[in-house]
Length: 295
Image 1 (spheres, helix red, strand yellow):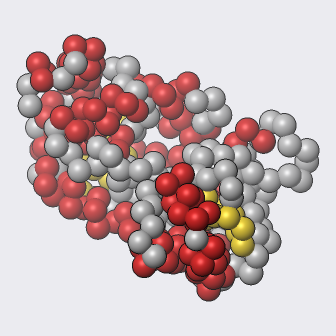
Image 2 (image 1 turned 45 degrees about the horizontal axis):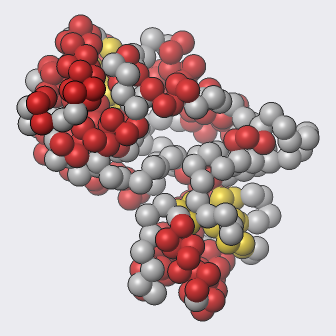
Image 3 (image 1 turned 180 degrees about the vertical axis):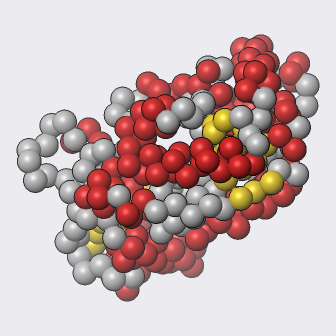
């Protein structure tokens, strides 16, 4: 699709992005499967050619199973090589401790794995899908960790916002253009509660079970988080689904039972609904011992 088929400001940013990618020359894209990194893979393939781009989806306990197949299919459709290196976040004490800077240790592990892989593949740089909104979002220790390790941020450099990513992805016909915001499974575990493979698996089971329960009830659902608060699971769903739960106590009860079946004893449905980064604001304000959740 030509640049003339999108708004002038977006066309300018697309041109700037293409130029930035050409300056870099070749990239290993940290590809989570989300809208931002998917768009970056597609943009790099357009600007550099698919043979100068590799997408890397890190395999670990924190990546939901549901993201793995679609990531491979997306790359295949673009003709871009897809690799799946294993990362070992759990080996980092700071990651397991799950303080407010957990994402720093996660991104450190990711980029520490990808930098030598990029060199081995003959690629000039590791690129992340950080956009301009991310840079203004305040507390993002993962961005700092990636920058310290030399990762490049073409979307940020070109001024792309999340809205720009979605608009350009839609114009290009990318299936990820309207993909709901996603985050690793560890982001569901309250700060201060240790991250373990068992906790991650339990959260994933709970979210799969909630989606299945709502699907059976005919309740549409886009955004969902099951937050592990230690002794309590808090379910956050988007406003449309929340309205469905409010209107039908039987469906709400089915959601609670689904989460309990996944391994949580105490379950509550958050009446405020889904909020990305819903508890990050408590990091600076909460007293010692308090907990919050990530994205």
